[in-house]
Length: 261
Image (cartoon, rainbow, N blue to C red; front, side):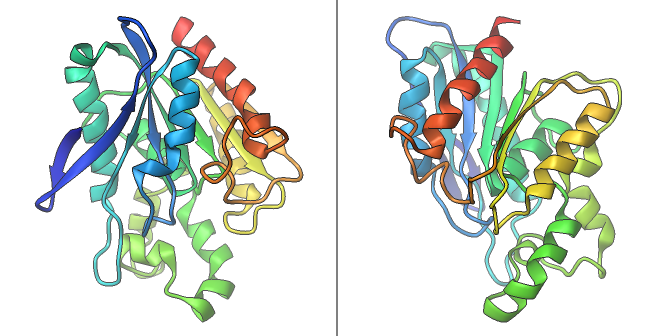
């Protein structure tokens, strides 16, 4: 289905529904890809898993960055548009518009967290957010990536924002979920990360969890000491012994409790 239009291109979502009439709680899924690649189909195994567990699941596309074509803030606006679409049109698909949450992995976790926390993006606030090995402080992420990316390829964070951080530090601040945390909100948040992640430093998730707790957010942290990057979309939650299989039950429980509250 098409949920929005951007730059003359249709933005689509793949919707997975449980059997029955509903209304069902909805998880909006955002795949990764370093802000420059990826596709909504990457989350199809998780969509099927959550549908079997009684949740609707919508995996959404969004604008990607390219050299000379930064994607921010358009890609975050796309996620906000998806939330607005399902809040307004969800009932015709058997979706409960008052029970919508966000799940993102890697770059998708960054965008999901940003739209969930920042007042900049026009759309309904989700009931909760789950982030899998995301980048939450883009200045720190750029610095951690610099030694590798400056040699092998253009820096992905620079492609996302279209500028180096010291040329526009306020833009990096604006695009960082960690910098959007404020007191007075209580959205439940689930964060998962691996200690062997070499693509997005584990400290990104650890610092984000700490800051959220300091601001009063209820945070569930699920750390996996042996886990690297690039497994959430690549492994199915039904593959015995996989990192995704280890995450599946705690993540399902988070959403069950979230939507029951």
